Structure formats: C-alpha cells, structure tokens
Length: 342
Image (tube, rainbow, N blue to C red):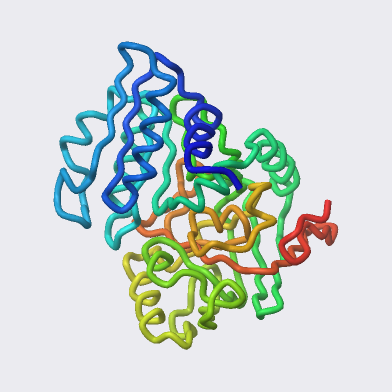
C-alpha cells in the first residue's frame, strides 16, 4: 500500500517514461480532480522549461455525459507526447473515450484510467511494474500457444473458451514507452478475442458505468448477493437466460447488451497479471479488479490489438472469482482459485 503521490510518480515516470522535455495532457473531471491534479503535479516535477503540461477539466468543455470528443480538446492532442485520461465512467461516454484514445495514439502514448480512484492509485499504481512486466510476459508465453481454456468456479461458472491462432494476444504489462502504445492503468493482464465461447457465466462484478453503479455483486466484499447469471452460446449471450436478484441491474445489463449488433458478443478473454492486486480483495472498481481476476468481456474486441475483424461501440467486462483454469491440449492447470500454479 502506497500513497496517491507515489502512485502518480510511478505512473508518470515508470509506466509512461515521461521525459522532461515532453508535453502532456491530463484530462480529468470534477469527480476525479484530486487524482488528475496529482498526476499533473507529478509530470510538472519532472518537466524542464519549455515542456507544456495541461490539466483539462471535462466539465469546462460541455455538459456530461459527452457523446462526442470536444473540438477544443481534440485540437490540443497533436501537441501531446503523453496523454492521461483520468475521469469517471458515465453512461454513453465510451465512444467519446475511444475517439480520444484513437486520436492520442496518432501522436503519442496514453494512460487510460476511466473510473480511477484513490484506492487504486495507492494499490495497483504502486505495484512494482518490473515484476508486473515479468509475470505478464510469462503468462503470455504460455497462453499464446493454447487452443482451449476450460474455466470453472465454485459459484457455477462453466466455460469452454476456444482461441483463434490467427488472432493476437495482447500482453498489458504497464510499461508504455513508445508512440502508439497505451494501457488501462493500473495495468497487468493478457487478453485476446476468443474464437468461440460456450457455457454458463456467473458474473460477480461487471464493468463500464454499470460497474460504477453497482460495484461488487457478491460477498464477502459486498453485503449484497446479486451475481448475474447468463448463458453463452457460440460467443453470444442468450438474453433470455440473464437473471439476477436485482431487477434494475438485470434491466441495465440487458439494455446494454442490445446497444448494437455485437454488444452481446464475446470480445475479450483475459488473464490477470498485476502482482500487487492479485493477492488483494476486490475493490469494486473494474479498472483494477480486471487485473486481479480472470474475466470475459462482451462487445468491442479491440481489433487494433487483437486483429479481430468486427467491432462494437460497447465493452462490458464480467469478472469471476475463485477461477480454476485448465488449458488444452495437455490438461495444463494454469490457475487454481485465482492463483497461478506454474
């Protein structure tokens, strides 16, 4: 456990390799201003005269939620070597965030941190990223050769995940030092777009704005016990099977998965590799928790990263706890109740 200041310095210097002569843009909002400002101060502490570091408050550019990237922000991006997105996730803003990231990567590198909070800055952002780098690459070397992963949990998840050798695995190690590189900091995962997924999924935490609204869905981290049950058939959610004790949550998820033609399609399968947060309880913040537990996501498959030939304007992660993962061929046990066993 570190401090907000330590997390900001680790992010700016270690993860993003900010150089004293570089320009940076930190986009934040009223909800996350304390964190955005701390990252701004960290960049300023390394900057030399002539470097331009700007802290932009989203509320100054329009009424939230913003469905389009404000023109005045877009005009600033070409001058930035490093960008940081430090704002809460709001319903309907994912396409706008994707616009920001795509533009930023044409000119520099980005730390994308939607929903970041102080706890994550003190935990996941204070991890030893040289160790995260090592574990990420070790897991990547294993899973990139795998054809099938069989995933099970005590709660009832039973998934068969088939992988496509023509699609790429993305090692997200947290060290983004070159133009065009980006990650969801705090980092630590290895993901791909699977070829096919079938079975039962019990989601114990979900992502995007739904996660910010409901948090963790099961004990002991939550006083509620409202996991989301759903069936996946040939990588598509059978919407008729979705159920949870929280009717409002059920309605929100069903509507989300109907946003576009691929919102209900599995776009990601991912293994966690943040050495600090894997050993900690979940926080209720998907930005960190997806780096601590195995998860499946529906929607956008990050085609630029994975090589998938389809896309979606939505992306919602589903985290499962106490996952056991067996890899095929060879019946290789990779994880046992969230712990790597190699």
